[in-house]
Image (cartoon, rainbow, N blue to C red):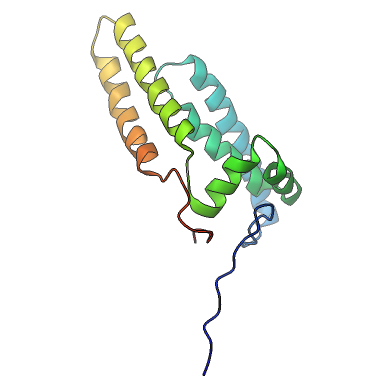
Length: 149
């Protein structure tokens, strides 16, 4: 009788071994990380721009751009837990969820208070609503030690 293969459980400090990034894609991921970081920093000052998503994308892109950078980010005390949670479980921490939605609501309220017209705040609200829903639909806690395929 053939025994079923046991699923691989990742150690907390071991990055998942996936398909390696092709060398010709590394500059693309580095550029995507830089653009996402810039948009995340600009989003702090511009009402309606969601910063959390851009910074998660930047962290993911930087980790895909280089194996050495991925190992450094994986073990980093500030960036490592978020990167591990995203790679292994597609999890957004509860603090990040709450802060993203609160900052988006505050920026929408500020934009509404500063404008005489309702058109721009309405457009910003239509853009932010699906992003806020997507953020809230992500899990806050991992349900298993298995990575998401």
